Length: 86
Figure 1: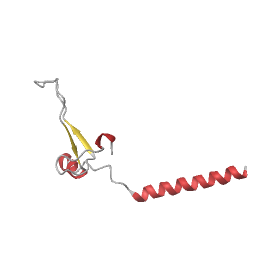
Figure 2 (figure 1 turned 135 degrees about the vertical axis):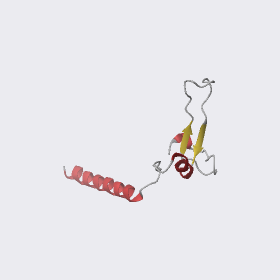
Figure 3 (figure 1 turned 90 degrees about the vertical axis):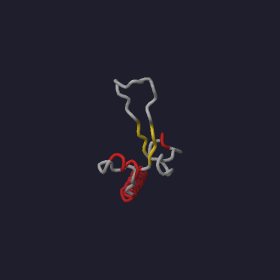
Figure 4 (figure 1 turned 135 degrees about the horizontal axis):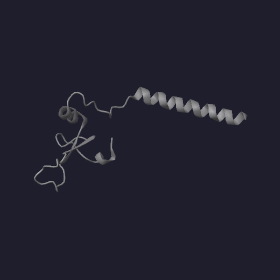
């Protein structure tokens, strides 16, 4: 989750926001010198707004995280024993 969403709530359901969307101001806008509209959304409402192709990237695959931690730990152990015998 981006740090810009920290502490922000979904505009539609008031749960923790994970996405920030913004309005694009076009060159032919009658008032181009204004701040664009921004809104914070949770994953569910972001997907509803953007459609089914907008899969949330914030779902954590814990099996992959655990595997990465195990590989890192194994590499540290191997490196430790390699340095000890050298």
